[in-house]
Image (cartoon, rainbow, N blue to C red; front, side, top):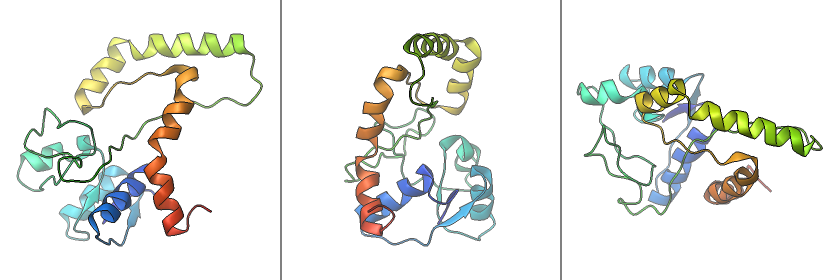
Length: 167
């Protein structure tokens, strides 16, 4: 099983799904999502955990088979591929990004940065990118991201403790 980077959310998501399914994988981390797909297409690994945009063309071209998606709903571009929830695994996994600031930054600065990022995610460039790679657009701002991150990481933390990554 190949994933993007050791310890990444991609790797943890696949390991979490394997744990829920009672399966075991030998995770092999690669430098990029595209490298994971090349490894699978070349026969070096059997399973890939990556972003849908890395495999759309290969699934649609018949070179690969998508087994599941970890979003809450099926993807429009892969409507026949079930979600993990549909397969009995009670989890959704999103690979979100955040911007971190050092503790003590002035509140006024946080509000200014928050407003700038809010404008950026509404831009045509960002919206075109989101559509192209079929990502979900979620902007929480600095006040909502901490709660979201804590809730999103519950299953990953449980698995990390089980595997000895987290004490």
